[in-house]
Amino acid sequence: MNTSFDDNYITASCKDHSAAVWKTNDYNKISYSLVGHSDIVTCAEFVADDIIATASYDTSLRFWKCK
Image 1 (cartoon, rainbow, N blue to C red):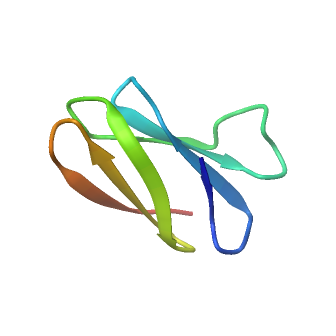
Image 2 (spheres, rainbow, N blue to C red):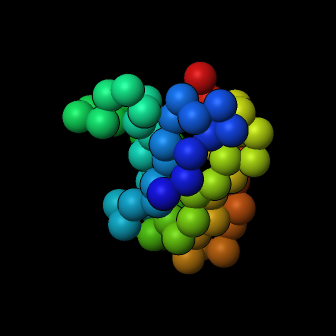
């Protein structure tokens, strides 16, 4: 798991080929999922407050604009 630089969001990689994003003030439901990889996502990291980088066993690296 990784938090955004402003500590408002958390992201984590998932075995279902996605990454999940939660608001830090509401852990009970996923705010949104980042879907697009064709294999297990191994890493999800904030690289800026509104950008998440994900890596997968499908050998791709993706950048997602968030919020």
